[in-house]
Image (cartoon, rainbow over all chains, first blue to last red; front, top):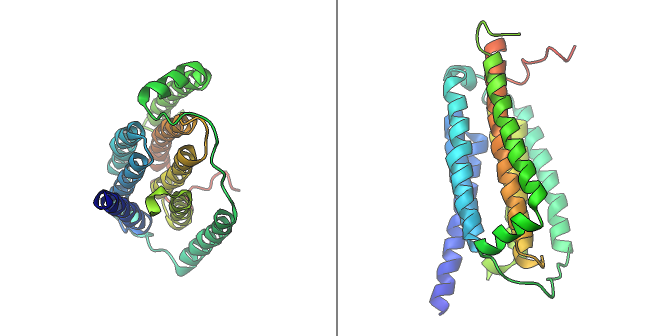
Length: 175
Length: 104
């Protein structure tokens, strides 16, 4: 029994390593394509954490939508967009930028860390512990029906808007 | 055990958020900033999932919110990539510092 728990912890640590190694690659890569690969690794780690949080469905969706769709869209944007040398020349621009970025990130980190350590979270007393897809679907179509419809509308609008914007940008097609 | 503790997940999502802030300031291109914004969104949705697991009475709410964040992120990245392509066609650059027609 203790062996299984140790195995769970080991897998958890591996997912955390995935997240942060991918994240470090993504924010500090020299080429944007490497940054996208780092992003994909990191998002895969987050999917693993969703699995550990008891929701395999969300882990699957994370893999499908983020790793499968968003990363591919960004990779396409890099491929049809600027040439690598355009991107690369200003990659490591100035120490001032790095200092600014790390001080902003560090101050936010300290602020929220103090809050997290201070706060005492009280678990909910009642309620179900049902993480199944059936329960999720029932909630999505009863209580959260309006946001569900709204997000489908939003996706449609975003797709049409993206197509129109990309078409405006083409040569000889400018308004 | 660390994988059964709310604070662990909160600290992981906080670190993801800070990575996103860092990358967003540091990257010198729109696509790099888009990649960093994905980290911020993921930190937020990991937070929702952690609270959903340990604190919330109804375990569907956090999952639904995380699903909505995913849909929003997909729509957002599609729109941003097409805007970036348009900007690149017009300015021949995706450096945010060079796109400043509305600034003056």
